[in-house]
Length: 333
Picture (cartoon, rainbow, N blue to C red):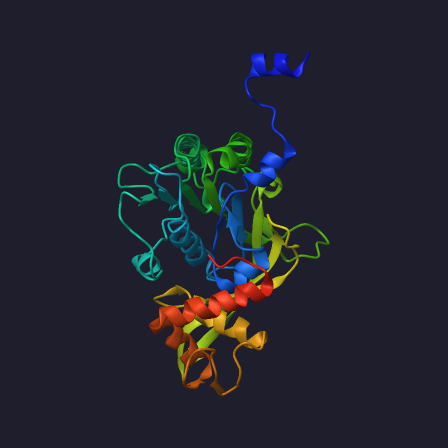
């Protein structure tokens, strides 16, 4: 069978290796520290997974990705729609309001979740996500969380019924269906999973990820959260550091790095605080108690004070980010 025969029978399915390089998808930024660790961010059209302990900031990080995806240009005449799968039913008003800059216009951002009289099963959730992935190019789908998906027989059965991992086969089939469609339709899938106690005899890990093996194989970018540390202003906790291990990247940057993301309550990922700490580590920002920022004609006290200054002066933030990203060889999106 010749090349022409293949094209005649199956369509235009033969592509050069260089076409993959030349048509690399744009990167969706997350935050300064995470972007540096991931080689620029999360590629559009990939599977980005997060796991970790409770309250570490997985939902805020997912909303942050949604916010930044809204800034990435799509082809003329198309728009990027965000679909947030609120499977756990714990997405709160404070979470949505607390991500600075997130466009909540219903034409651009919608939540998928159960309503009174219509409790969605795991099968229905996955079916809805499947239809979006196949029919809405450039969209972002958040599944919060895969671990909370409950099969129909779990929902309608008795509480004492015993069934081992009934959703795994559905998640595996869903994964096989979307694996080749995400990069073609440039749909970005953001998935969250939980940790559970490891009851295996002699196991070294006390907790393991509650997910299917199919998702582990399919993930392009993976962050594993380890712990959090409070950030205080005086005696008041104003945010937290979330500590992550980069298990997978989708760029030339190698995995295995340890990185922190900074959350400020009421703002989301505190990009300004992250940038100040990175710039200080690189020697671009000098000082300890009082800090000198390039291009700023006054010294500013403390990390919190410097981050607040950058919040109030977006041009200073942009200039400093450009300097930092140029130093590490990344484009400043």
